[in-house]
Image (tube, rainbow, N blue to C red):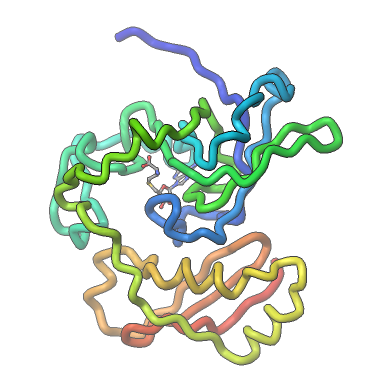
Length: 234
Ligand code: SAH
């Protein structure tokens, strides 16, 4: 097999510090902001000249958090409740040959500050530190295919969990003035019910945790509600 050597042109700095609870596609949580920070070789405005005319871009990236685990020919998409298997090439699973991912995300701004070129993005589904292999402008006339059919992934994923906060958590968040969208961010992440599919059938009360930015957040599943019980700075 021919081998190719590719290297990252930049990496992502994002609020998502672990895989768990990251939305399964971009756009689902608009408050998910990130910075794409260019590597030294590409750290020049020329590389992105004209890109600010585009509202959205494609990111081609490496699933660096799972790449060392290899791939499976068949995977269980969460959409199918984790019970049914599909060929890896029929899914967006992370465990794939070459571990390459793609996301269309919103480009909010191009920043050149203190000698560092960055793209400011929102609606991302990427782990902090994700290596970016390429960037391309999103072309609606060609990339948007509203008539396309998508089999088991044909409709928007369900985001119907209720999300509630303990008053102490809301008090804490109100003091984090640098993060004005934190309540909405947490709400949208938890609305999607990040639990693994096989746990959703169980009715037992369960408690989960995630880190967003440097906040450790815990919640409890009570029926169809995710109740945020705890938040602290790590
Ligand atoms: N939009 C992409 C990603 C789909 S999989 C594509 O279609 O190719 C989405 C999942 O990838 C998220 O739920 C998150 O848990 C995982 N993920 C995001 N960044 C990752 C990374 N750098 N390494 C491993 N997994 C990652």
